[in-house]
Length: 394
Image (cartoon, rainbow, N blue to C red):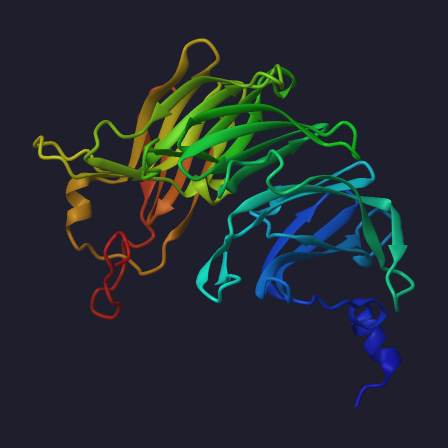
């Protein structure tokens, strides 16, 4: 058995610094220049309502200069659950956290099973400098709440959830959705008094918000269009918002991928933001797009690949070209591909665009739209030894 001094040399972090989460379910990670925050989902049983209320537990680790490893330093417990890593943001000595409380079902006063609460959202600002040491720990401090926008007090209409969020310095942007897409602008300049100062209702919703333009005065968003009456998802849409006046956000332009109601599109960029690429100098947006065409016009416009769009404050969002990684005819055949798929990514170097999707890698000239080369890693698949899979897994 190894002696403790030897173990300390091998595992200094685990022996000298250690903390346990109350929950290990659904971990979200966010890092600033000085602090690493790790959050997990949890629940608490409320005797009054007899339901399990949602909570998020956050641990902060110092990763600043002068340290060779992450040092546990902060802890917080906030109501609701995070959407993703963009739901947390450190600005100065404060951590901003946006969460959603999911609708809850349970027994009412008459003992009948019914919906007890609706979806609601809140924004909480935690102070790192006024944190007090956690009981039983000399190094970990509990972050204190200094400001808050309470649930049902401005972020989202009744029963709406947060679908997108972005913090930028003293401002923030949040999108909620149920049938329509309220796009909210937030003034966070005073930590103890965060405020919703602007609201814009549009159809559908955004999943990712990307700041562009001078002083981040424009927000480029990718999401999905939806029926305003029913909330039914219709397909991928791209929106350009003007946020130069926070109290008057405007939708400047919108582009919907579908050309008819008999088509349906999706994009990995809706949930994998590394698949999103915007080129600020050429003002070009590169998105992975999967389009299924179900109409009977005799032409199958189905495509799985990438689409390139020009983004202009005046002229709008316009389609420039498609890079198809599999053509309409090929997608109908069984094909012979590995069961695993490549991660969806795009890279640009010297005017040449390399796209990675599904089972192929394609290099394209961005100026002429001409394909330069294609690489198929499944080309030499031994059909006698390997089990063939279709392009899209079934």
